[in-house]
Image (cartoon, rainbow, N blue to C red; front, side, top):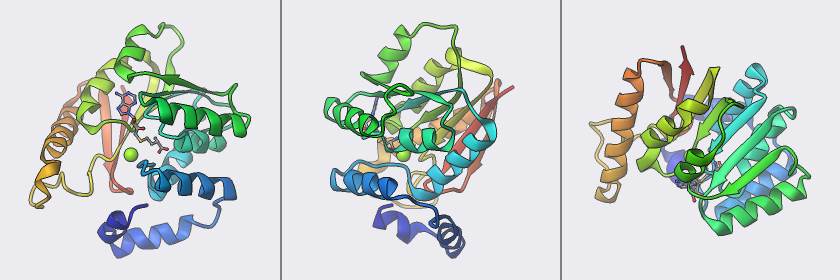
Length: 219
Ligand code: SAH
Ligand code: MG
């Protein structure tokens, strides 16, 4: 978690965080350190904790992740339900290599498959017929709607889509002022959240967990 995040957290959020730090294992902490060193924005503690909890409940056989980074969230999700099979897509070749290394070091290469490419291209080429039960979107914030639209045909009937960072450092809350360099991505996420909330095929909950999670369920 970045210091910027910590400053944004309320007493309530800090209280919740204080209750979820008791079961972290060394490998989790090590991967977090590597991500921070390499300035890779991995999922914050409260968010990945909730996603893991959801995975324990749902027991998804097939998981799709958009935005592997160095493999932290994929390994965390698989650890929560080791019978899952994960496909995760990363466009940056260096990060892809790092993720492969970490996944191999954990001997999870049979269960976690990493593809190097732009998720939109990869999804266009993915064969249908073996749908995903749970999808995590955690890649470029300007493209969330397009990711979602590309994912829809690959979702199982009870499919769940989780979108990370939907409050974007709380900047999406309109009254708040924010640095101008964020303007485009704030506008994109605001538009995405509006679009998602109106989507006729999904029910979406926006949860004040970490940097904001949207949980969308097909109906
Ligand atoms: N989910 C990871 C962190 C991912 S960081 C974790 O919590 O451990 C976001 C990643 O998305 C970056 O590595 C970036 O290179 C990748 N990304 C951004 N746009 C993408 C796209 N269109 N397709 C695939 N990967 C993308
Ligand atoms: Mg994220």
